[in-house]
Figure (cartoon, one colour):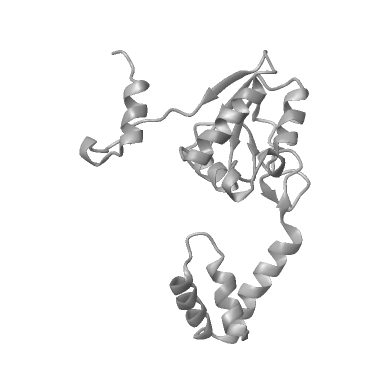
Length: 196
């Protein structure tokens, strides 16, 4: 296999990137000056060597613990469990959560061979055993796998009677129109309706 085909194959393995997009990216890179391509290669190499999951939460970091875990202003009694690091970025951008996080590193997906042992369930149990956590917020995606993961975690957390378990609210997006909302979201919105 040629170097170009290898590059296209590796790019196509990225999430959301199909073969056509991978080809476009590869040919775009070939049109760049050599030093720009080498800078990208160096950045990838440095990330591969220096970035690793935080020992406390699983968030990518270059230190032993990430900036969120070392921030003394955070509330240790609130733990938000997410599937991937990108969810932490989104929640932090919203600015409404001041607790701690735990990044599972994926979601349960039996069809893909991803069971509980592939996730950071042990890290979650160690955090709970510390006795500081009073509420766990399950912030998994609203996909079939995300719901299965949340259900599994809810059952697991049942063995910690002093820990409150909550779930992110589901429903209509702000500014959304009913005619464009999918049935599952509309169903969640109806079920979780509030009295005025």
